[in-house]
Image 1 (cartoon, rainbow, N blue to C red):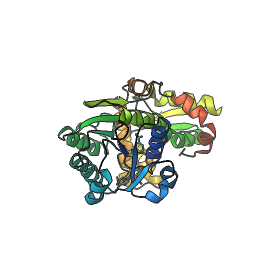
Image 2: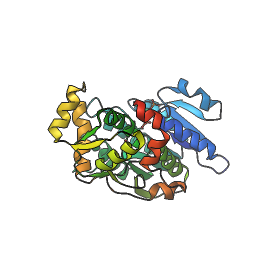
Image 3: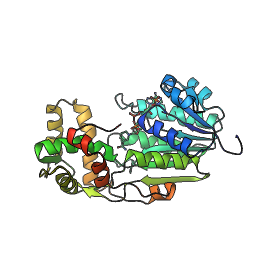
Image 4: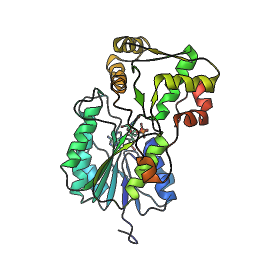
Length: 301
Ligand SMILES: NC(=O)c1ccc[n+]([C@@H]2O[C@H](COP(=O)([O-])OP(=O)(O)OC[C@H]3O[C@@H](n4cnc5c(N)ncnc54)[C@H](OP(=O)(O)O)[C@@H]3O)[C@@H](O)[C@H]2O)c1
């Protein structure tokens, strides 16, 4: 503790979400901040602003013992290690165990919408396994089940504009896309809050949109008619493989469409506003704000 404020630790601090959370914590003068990352040299800018930067790699439990020492509240940002089956869950379990060992009072974790055992999303078991480990651990926790980032739409909708067609295997299912910025705001607020119990929150945008809704939004923004073409799952996977994606990656992406078609991503919550005091951004506003990137197909970082 320092001046009565708990010490806040952010893992994965050099990633896009991590850096943004650090910025928001500094803006809010939230308290002593520790940034834990595999690449401390990338965070010199934060070090100069009073953030303590430590080396941490979820593949190395010993590094976590040192990195997590003295943290009161800790944000575990889920990793991007999805290439090797089982690796990401093991990483997250190492982080949960290290947080408990370090005597952390509260853990915030970035999970995924509806990750239960019945989810068809191939990445969901990592999140379900981590949530289960948290449930069995000593610290309090806040699970933030982040919906699909609206940011991911910039690339797919650019392709749709080029083709005049938006291909997906999502049927008429709707998705409550949320911007990464709103996920960062929610995570920073949950970390800096005084909540000490256990809660699971759906982090969503303000509305759920179908693929046909997206086609209409992007038609209006681009001035080109874009039509939604529903595909069978197999056809979508074949198309992605023909476009150069490895089969397992194509299957992982396509598994989101199955879940969307089942309505698993359609829940709209008010958690972002409750945590941050600000309504989450609408997809149409996000795309309009990034119109250049949308028309050029550049993902925003
Ligand atoms: N909801 C969605 O649509 C969506 C989309 C994309 C990603 N995600 C998830 O959200 C996370 C954050 O998103 P982002 O945009 O910030 O992704 P990003 O920029 O690709 O960041 C990847 C993150 O993984 C961390 N990481 C990788 N290997 C690690 C290890 N061995 N130990 C500890 N941390 C490790 C990185 O931390 P350091 O490099 O600082 O160590 C970094 O924070 C992603 O990692 C992914 O799990 C969700």
